[in-house]
Length: 191
Image (cartoon, rainbow, N blue to C red):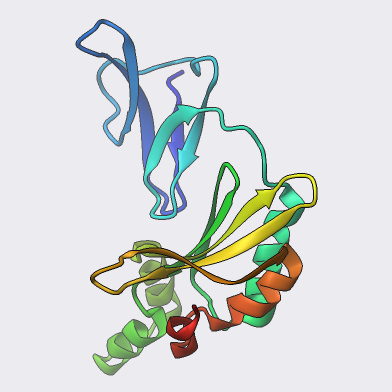
C-alpha cells in the first residue's frame, strides 16, 4: 500500500522516491498516484504539512517546544485576538503564528452581494483556499527557564525580516501581551 497523506484542504498526496545525481534516494510528494510510489516510511523521516498545506517529507525534528507551550499560544489566540483564520507552525525552538492573507468574511460578503444563498458552504470553501503569511513568533532562548522572546515580521522594504518586540519573558505573558495585536493596525506599531 503506497504512503499517502491528506492535507487539511482535502488533497491527497503520494510519496515518491527518486534518485539524486549522486545516486542517493530522494523523496517527494505529488498528487499523482502513478510512478515509483513508496510503500514504507523511510527511517528517520516524517511527513510535514506547512501552514499553506504543502506536504513534504523531512527528517524527524527534535521536540523542543512542548505540547503545553503550543496550547498556550493556541488558547491565547482564541482568547485574546479576533483572528478566525490562522495557523501555528513549530520548527525547532520557534513557534510561528501565520495569519490569513485573505479576509474570508469580506470575500463571503462579496459572494452574498452577487446573490449566492448558501454562505456556509461558500465560507468553508473559501477557508480551504486561503493562503497564510508568518506574522508573529515566539523564540525559546532559555531551555531550562523556558524563557522566550517575541518577534514580528516587518514589511518595510529596507527590512523585510523579523524584528524583536518587547522584552523576554514566560510564554503565557508574552502571548497575552502580543496576540491581541494580530489582525489589528496596532500590530505594525510594535517594536
